Length: 264
Image (cartoon, rainbow, N blue to C red; front, top):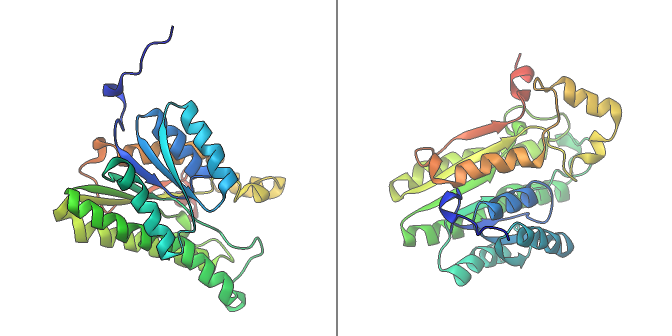
């Protein structure tokens, strides 16, 4: 007979957490990890099948969740996402802005970036972060505390070639994170960003499955391996927990040292 869980030892016990883009990759890994740490989860995604798969994995990890299907780039959808955990549990402790897109596989420098690509990438990666954060902050101000975790990128500091719109979106997320931290620290609302290096997900796998391209990434990563979604989830647990209570306005680079080598 298995022993009951000791929730006192769980790092996120009873925290109410919203995770956008939870249907795959980093978002799914965060959801599974948070469930195992005792959090109650509001899971959102634009893809229903992936979201349903994540729900089953959360259940297997012993977690409780509600789901919202929608597009973070649409203000009304984002506001529904924030409302879901409040309606279910009466509060929102942590909002994780994970949903993001990279754009087309072809390199797109600024002069060949279409209006549609620019608007879609900025809409999801930056405006979506704003819509979620704005709605979350309103609730957090009412309850007297809160925690926002945004997903930036090493590309927000040193852009990847041919990814002008993506770099702009992630640089904007990082600047917005600092602004949130400065504006709401006195109200006990923290804001930090996790900035991944190359991580093996569905969004990047096409590139990493090409041996020469995979080797290029490995050569640029001093730690000598490709990042995995669990590497980002571990950082998210720390930022969501009370262990990081004195941390706000920070960019945490989880990149295997990629930034170090790139800046030489």
